[in-house]
Structures are given as structure tokens and as C-alpha cells.
Image 1 (cartoon, helix red, strand yellow):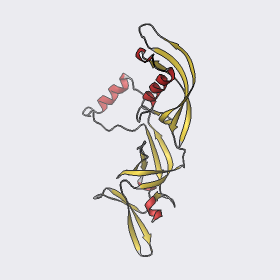
Image 2 (cartoon, rainbow, N blue to C red):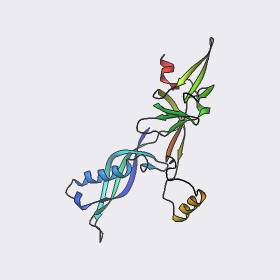
Image 3 (tube, helix red, strand yellow):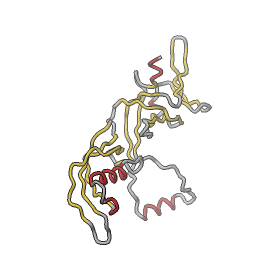
Image 4 (cartoon, helix red, strand yellow):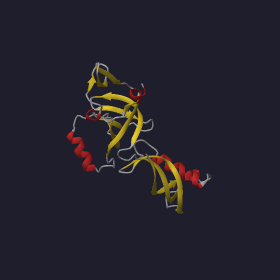
Length: 210
């Protein structure tokens, strides 16, 4: 689920931080830059969690017109990137027509689509929850997938969205394509996991513990 990824970056330290321990200032700047839900997702790599260690510091430079130091840093960073078919346990954040949305606490962009739920399943519009119509010898029983329930699922796919800045021409195209669009349009997450519970042993923990 977590891996240590080797990275290289040039870190800028402002003059007012020169009195601090150099490694501490470097670590703070790296975490400030990378440990973030949106900017901390590296394309194809995963979600950056925290600095693991600094392996090498190259020479620092101060450029004309800028009193800060600039240092090329080699380091290892802890990244959240579960492998495909890994089994994880999270909590149901909410349900929608798109499926069951799951949170791990530090990562919320997990979706179990309707076709990957225990079948037969239906969406209860009034309660806004998915329901597994569990068949028994005594007939069907409705098992609700309520918000806050612990759920065990298998990772089936991952979707990375390239959030690199677009050029002026691309931005102009987007604006012309949606002339009446508001600035509050929903922002797509840069990293999404897809899961399934349509296998024995997967699903709400309360189903198997009762």
C-alpha cells in the first residue's frame, strides 16, 4: 500500500530560515510542497504522504536578485500507491448512483461502481444508499451499505488525471467550449482508485461478523 520512492528536486530556502538546521528546513519545504491531497499526487506514482529520508545534498547556490539558497536534493518519499488486487479496508463515505464512495481517512477518492457490488444490488433513492438483496432459503433480505460502515474491498483499477498546467491556447479553448460555466465547477481528483466487493469475504465487515 505504501512505497518509498526515490526523487530529486531543487529546494529553495528563504534567507530568514538560514538560522535553522539545514536538513530541517529542507524537510519542511519538501513536505509543504508534496504532502497535499491535490498537489501531492504525482502522475503514475501515487499520493505523497511524508518524507522518509534525505539521501544526498548537492551544493547550494544563491542567484543574483534572489537571496534564497537553491539546493538539489536527493530523497526518498513515502507514497500511497496500492497494487492492483490488493485488499483494503475503509469506511463508506457516501453512496450515489455512480457507486459506493469509500474513504481511508487520508484518501477519499475510492469508488466501487454498481457492477462491482454484491449482486443483485439496487440503489435506494430515498435513503441514498446501495442495498444488497441477499437471497436466503427464507427469501431476500435487504443489507444496507450505510455511511460510516467498515468495508473490505479489492483494488481493481486506478485512474490518474494529468493536472499539469495548460497553456493559454488550451485555456482559451476550454473557456469557449463552456461560455456560461461557473468557477465553482466540480474539480476532478488527480488520482482515483476503483474497487470491487463482488467476491466472497468482501463487503461490509458487519455482514461477515454477524
